[in-house]
Length: 172
Image (tube, rainbow, N blue to C red; front, side, top):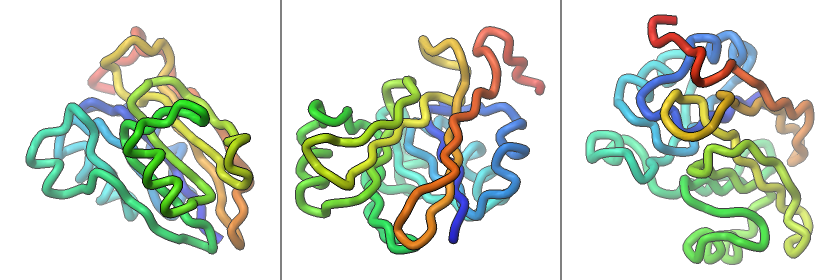
């Protein structure tokens, strides 16, 4: 059994409350648009972190992360990328990896919209987008996801609201 916290679109900042919400997680997964190496390093110091780079990430972050991650953990095959789309509207690159790797869980960021949904065209595939945990973008509420994987199954899935974007204080 493993507990996972998923975050995306930090764009160089996330509220410190993330550490409280992820305190019982074994790993953190960042689905891109990290923003600064300091964000990545603070997550890595806190918990083992898997991360992909996003479209705003510079060379420094791209050297530390991958564009796509495909891995199996606790019997579940996972595919994570930044720009992936949604079931029925995947990006061409994401669709190619999904069709080739046949993951049970697909995670992406980019849209700043929290969404969890099954793919009706691909039974057994769950899509997750944790929304955005940073203060840059059009989203109104900062969000992350937390869940457990055990014997290939996802359970205890929680969507967590971290606060309203306009009310976040960078010195928090």
